Length: 170
Image (cartoon, rainbow, N blue to C red; front, side):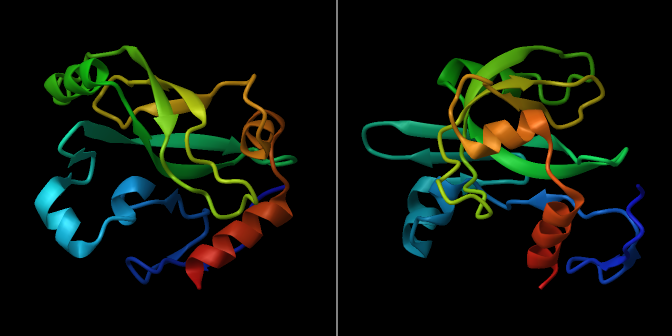
């Protein structure tokens, strides 16, 4: 079964036949800050985010996740955020422009995917960098009891994909 629907992208206004990636522009933690706090303690770019509190600094990177779609040869792509330890964050930052840097980190999901009744915040994930400066991909830990994790390993239906895409396009 192929994805035969066409979608109008809310970003570029162009018509696409593939599903748009479902992306989050910032980690949930950053989005919850007031505008004043964002300007005082937050730093956000397209791939990195830091929130510098008095007692700690939270560090986040942008990642991808490919969700299997049952009965198709396509995946639904996500652009998400994870938090990393200081050491992992610094290693990723130092090697960000190194096309040959390939490693793995532990991270916590920091995007709250609204299609789930329970928050998807703080789901443990393995984070894998990719050759060629592509964004890292995450794989949630299969022993974490959450519907998001079950869906990752079992796949979601084409109907569910269309519901999620339609929410984004509205």
